[in-house]
Length: 590
Image 1 (cartoon, one colour):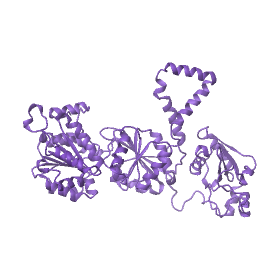
Image 2 (cartoon, rainbow, N blue to C red):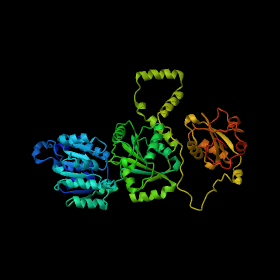
Image 3 (cartoon, helix red, strand yellow):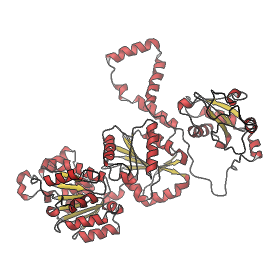
Image 4 (spheres, one colour):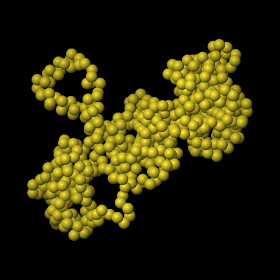
């Protein structure tokens, strides 16, 4: 269904933006607004509602005296007011209305917290057509008489449920009470709780209620994934998900500011271009972060829920919930940052086994059916890297003359196979290295049932049953960022063994030596050679594992026993685990 007849400048603006047909919410609002009714609209974010109410109030703003030109009158007292819950959403609405009303000579002014109120007061005094703002700042301008509401013909409350959740009810009632009673009032809300209905009953006249049926399946453009994780591997799984998706823009949600700071630092350290959004940032910092995401200087945003409300990034295709949302409504608000206005998106939740039941209850309330899986492995990502490298535009573009000349010089000293390997290495060095992560499986065994008794390092019988230890060498060391948190999941997954079967781990600059206890050594070596990337290799060491290094050789790894080590420590190194030893931990001792 095409758009109805609109003022010519607005129709031209839609055409220039590629709008051919209205979205369901736009079609319903335009049809209802033709009867000059107040509207109470239930519609989700990302459904095109900003354009919907921008078009709905056009006939009220462009008076009959405009004639065939259908232009707005000279700017003066504002004709329309849009109230939004957050600075980001208000600024986003301003941008949308600016392009929509630009051909009609529209002037749209934003009044939001964090900006200079004196500059806003000057812009209001110079005249405007539409004011978009947050409740607190709008009330402040009304109280200071900077904002004259007497000429308002339309008032819009955008995402009214969020405004009430954020505690703006008193400010909203103050603003609405100051506006002319004959105004048209459009109230938009993703949900319609009793508080919203009470607000509508008090400040709207015979409002027409619209529940957009097309929005009830508001997840049609969002694919949901539930990824099983080990809690201590959360950061590594986030990294692998970002690498797997290779999204132009992604947002990662955390529940606290501290978690945001920590994850931002971790991802930045690993080579991602990351910005953060949390309540502790000033408005200038928030604007700079959002602009970096829009122009591509940053590709990942780590944010808290409140800080990310109202964000609209056209290239955002991936949402990761590093921390589980508090409830189904938060899940929907977070996920709604992607899959907007017909674009496809993915929402990924990281779920430890201990929180699976709560997650399933939340999915049932939100009426979504996610695909469950383990986290993407490092090998999966390396395979994707190979496919992406071959599809890179550089491979399809004809080489320039200087490229051909350089290729000839390279071939004079290297074989084609060597050059291909170097090319692959150069391509990989541009990308953050994937992490080795583990899949905790479909869930824990039922209570009272255990496949094997838990390993008890205090139990001599269990220690003896494990048999003698075998030392192995791994071709990764400190220069490869090897540490126990990364190595343990890789060794257990590729080697098909449990963590209790891994003893001491000793990390050197270029290699790592580790123990495999009991009768698992042969099984481990066979499984490790069969699974995973051939670039990562292990080999069994004959006899003792570098006894000179065990003595605290200055060239050895950090944390080794020094020559001053006591009798008990040296005995423990010869005899196996100490009574207080925890298997799988890198203590620097056996």
